[in-house]
Amino acid sequence: MPSTDHDARVWQSSELAAAYLDGIRGAIPLAAEQIDIMLRVIAARDASVHAIMDLGCGDGLLGAAVLDAYPSATGLFVDFSQPMLDAAAERLRDHAGRTQLLQLDYGRHDWVSRIAAYGPFGVVVSGYSIHHQTDSRKRELYGEILDLLAPGGVFLNVEHVASATPWVTGIFDDLFIDALHAHHRNSGGEKTRSKVAEEYYFRPDKVSNILAPVDEQCRWLRELGYADVDCHLRLLELAVFGGRKP
Image (cartoon, rainbow, N blue to C red; front, side, top):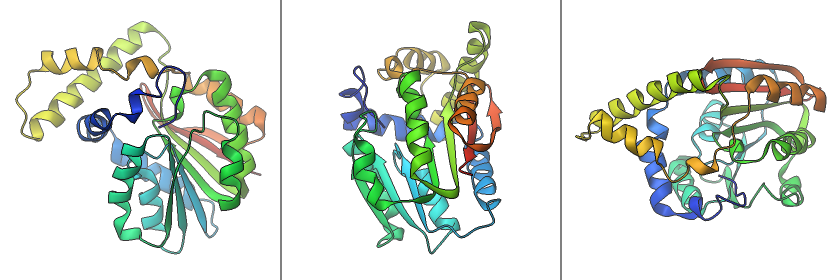
């Protein structure tokens, strides 16, 4: 997770980090399909993967999937939240010696100076993190990521994006509440759907979401110089998109 003016303290909370990882991340619809398409796009590079970065890594789920697919690669896992990095360290135990965890705030423009020595990267992935930044910062960040990629390197963002209208947002909210309720019940919980919905609408991290349309974000990538930009998978407000460095 990154910080912004209004969410820095929120994501430093170990309670919120645990609630997100246990109660939300596991409920995301098409989560397995998102990872599958991410790996397929990376494989289409038809080139060796030596160094990868998981930016705003949370518990390291995406980066770990890339390391599983490329046993000779090393991974840099970056997050602002120490509780998230602690969760990533736990997940990455089987990749000891191949990973580096770094606590920093990529919302700050000086973050690149601390990253550059680890690159260039053949792959940069990010999951449900960059949407906490303002739109202007998102666009700047995409340019900074492009500079950190090796030629032919791939950037893929598994992200929460904006719906076209409030009516479509309502459809997404219903879908996600159903998914959260099913995940809760499958985990042995007894909350009603109404209770799950109440917690969803009034969750403490909601204020930190700054959603942007995926089409607009893909346009930014093209303008910055990324090649083969596309949205590879989308389900309402959940999207996998990105591009390659020429």
